[in-house]
Length: 140
Image: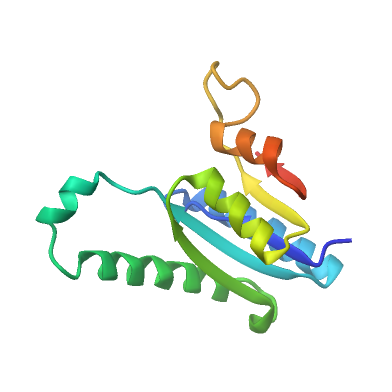
């Protein structure tokens, strides 16, 4: 049923990340599927880049990629069936683009408990559910 599981990961949310990884691992084992962990970082204010060290962006990218690699290694599944990717930009657009380009069968994501303005799921999760071309499993 599923051959490619895309799992967007918020590196700042350790509890939700572990929860999502557990589901991704279980689904991958059940369906003999590949897993792709994706992290999307929002872009900071561009004018601030003028005041940052020259290697700032490279250091940030390297650190984030290392965190993703460590998470991938923590999954009890064949390493060659797990990949990671890091994107910068608007969260839901980058996740949808990655799902489309990789050919995901399902997007497995966690959603924060939203405020009343987003009654059921958060804004990024809501946009992903509305616009994805594949199935979306939202974890709480």
